[in-house]
Image (cartoon, rainbow, N blue to C red; front, side, top):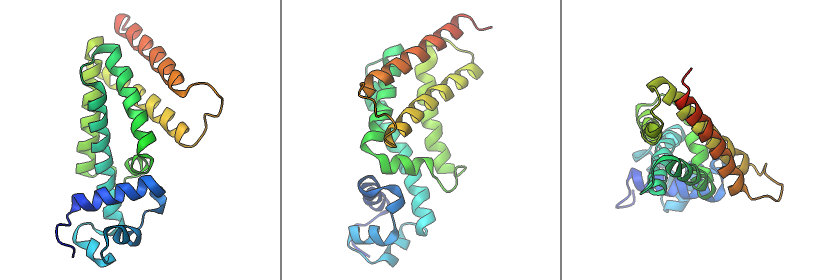
Amino acid sequence: MRQGLDQFTVLQAAAELADAHGYEQLSLASLAKQLQIRTPSLYNHVKGMPGLKQALASYAVRKLKEALIEGIIGKSGDEALHALAFAYVDFVRQHPGIYEASMGAPDPLDPDFQTAGTEVVQLIIRLMESYQLEPEVAIHAVRGMRSIVHGFASLELRKEFNIEISKNESLHYAITAYLRGVQHVSQNPD
């Protein structure tokens, strides 16, 4: 076992490989090669490929949360939600492999993965507080926001936006239209 090797270092290397070569290309053999160790040594840090994928999914969601927080610092209201959307999509642009890992957790009910995901949801709920939505409606609003940014990022990742119009302008348009709808719901709850 290489001295100084820990699970975090293993996950960082796995993330680099996934982002550079694609999540589906990630293997224990390629990871061991990247870390300059023998494949069996990885079992000291992850429980095989399923364990690596599960740990990488949680790692990815935590990295996403960090990117979202960085993107919204100093902002509030609509500005913060626009910033969050762009931070989300930019994260996927920069980290396509680990983003895919976050969507493919072997056990989506794993407590660590659930905690990481809940933290992202709570962040968005806090940003939605300016709309003074009822708690249940706030959850609907968060689900809508996540659906928009995930859908946009996923389509872009798969090269589905081929018309020569700014993708960033399209994202801004989508979020603006969505937030107008949320604002309307907050002012007209019935």
